[in-house]
Amino acid sequence: MLAAVALISFVVTVAALRVLLARFGRIALDRPNARSLHETPVPRLGGVAVMLGALVAVPFVSATHGLALGLAVGLAALSFVDDVRGVPTIVRLACHLLAAVVVVAYALLPMAWFELVLLALAIAWMTNLFNFMDGSDGLAGGMACIGFAAYAVAALMAGRTALAAVCIALSASAAGFVLFNFHPAKIFLGDVGSIPLGFLSGALGVLGWSEDVWPLWFPLLVFGLFIGDATLTLLKRLLRGERVWQAHRSHYYQRLVQLGVGHRGTALVSYALMLLCAAAALYARTEAVNVQIGVAAVAIAVMSAVAVWIDVRWSRAHV
Image (cartoon, rainbow, N blue to C red; front, side):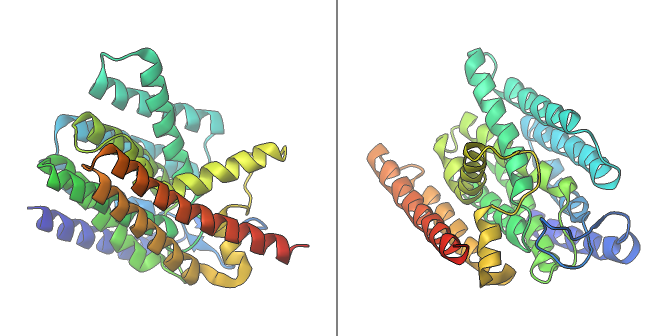
C-alpha cells in the first residue's frame, strides 16, 4: 500500500508540474532582485503540485493526520493568494499560529497551557523557517524528500501505517518536485509549497511524538539542517540590529552559493548533511538515552563545523 501511495503521489506531482509549466507558468513569477540567488524569472507555484501529490494519502490517514493535512491545504490556499497578490504579514503569521494551536490542541489536550504554547510556537517557527530556507535550487525540495522519508521509515518501524502513508506521500511528492527544481530550476515551490511543508514537518513531528513513534528530539534532528541554519541566522541578525523581517542573503546556504560552491554543489552538500541527520535520528530513535545524546551531539558537531567553515571562508572573502 505504501509503495502504491508513493508511486501515485510522485506521478501526480510530476503530471501537475508539467501542466503548471505549460499552462500557468506566468501567473506568479519570482523575479530576480538584489537579495535573490537566481538570474531569470522563474514560476513559483510548484507547491500546488506537491500538495496535490500529498493528498493521495488522504484515504489512508487517521482523523488527526487528516486534520493536519487539511490545515496545511488551508495554509497553502492562503499562501497561493500571497504568491499571486500578496497578504499582510500579520495575517499570514496569525494564520500560521492558529493552525499550529488547532493541531496541538486537537491531538494533545488536556495538557498544561505552557506546553501547548511552546509546541504551537515551535510548529509556527517550522512553518516559516521552511520558507526562509527555500532560496536555492533543490534545497527545500530535497529537505522535504529526505525529512518526510525519515518520518515514514520511523512510523513504519513503529507500526503506524497511517502516519507512514502521509509522510511517504509527502516525500514522494517532494521527490517529483526536485526533478523540476534541481539547478537550473524550472519552477520554485513558492509560499504555496514551502509554508504547508514547513507546517507539516512540525505538526507531524509533534503528532508522531504523541503517538509514541519517536521522542520529541527526533523531528528536531531530522530537520536539523534547516532548523540550525534558519535559527542561527536569525539570532545573528538580531544581534547585529538588522530588520529580521526583511529579505536577505545571509543564510549559510546562501553564502555557500555565493562563495562559488553554486546551487548544485550547495544542494549536494546539504543532501549529505540531511541524510546524516536522518540516519542518526533513525538509529538513535529507540536507543538508550546516552546513545541518543551521543548521536545527536555528533550530528550537531558536524553541522557546526560546516557552519564555522562557511563563516571563516566568508570573512576571508570579505575582508
